[in-house]
Length: 234
Picture 1: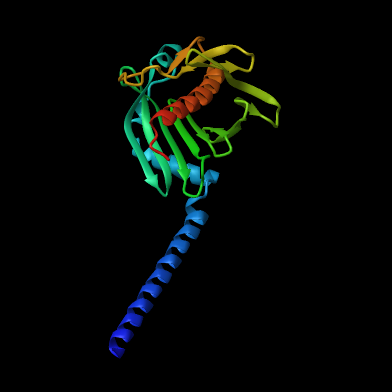
Picture 2: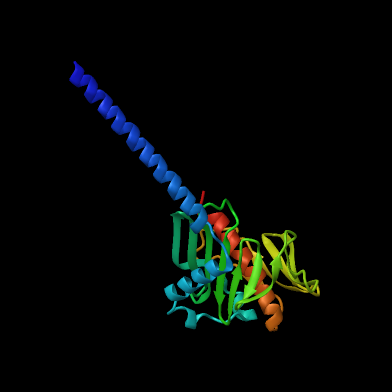
């Protein structure tokens, strides 16, 4: 009888110690996860940019330039899609034209420990666009401004609004430049079952400045619309 009791207490002690060990391990993982994986500094985003460059090193040189004609062909079709959940959330892929020409490489990542605001990477012909968790916009490594809560792409320091989102009508959201000219629009497809639902329209032949404004606002909105529809993130 004594031996059985000793055996019972030994097993109970072992179970308690195992539970204590697992609890300590989970707490350690949580702390490390918060401290390390939860970082979203500019250097962290640049490291992710470098990874994305390596993953798509063969596709980047072949990206189609954005012109009025080509922008009209942009679709929500994704090539080489990669979506992962676990320690945070990560999405990568290439938006193509309706003819399956690669037009924009994208990555959106929400590090573990963050509830919503992640960062976005967009690579197009001639431009690498980074949008950090505070919606600051970097073009080819240079900080140009941010997208505020009103949907304006602006630089507060020089008090300049480069462009903004217009109203949404008939499943289209206009993209305006700083002079109020409608450069084009981003579409929200009525039929997502189509193999290549169109994503954008260009109304003006854009110079370099307006094209960058359009890429920032249209590219970001297009990705947001796609993820809102297709993302498996919970």
